[in-house]
Image (cartoon, rainbow, N blue to C red; front, side, top):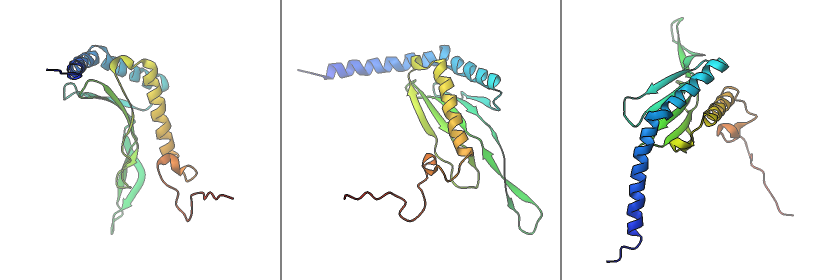
Length: 180
């Protein structure tokens, strides 16, 4: 019986299973600590108003979240026949490090949003890394990228609609190229 490339596929499969076990061990041995210590250092040294939330209820699917928290958006619904108002709460965004099922690490940005005011933008995946690929410099870059996105969201205006994933509104907004 000629199994051809089947033998190499089985070997590759076994290697990937071994990688998963190794990646999960790396998370517990040093990666989780690297992420939390680096983020704590960034918070302290930059005086960033943020907190860390470690979600470890599910083993090998743990999550570390750098959250800018939530607060009153300054927008409120007036309650009819009353002097009362119902404030809209704003989530200020978060940077998420999530351990995947295969032990790799997914980094995502969750955008700010105001409850009751449109739909929240879906999180953006920044990248997926093997544990040995994540270095302190990457974490700093992730926080910079996160803050860049949050700043763009907070400073939104109609000068840059494409950056927010919003198409311009208007009649014939696309350039028409004609051949002469």
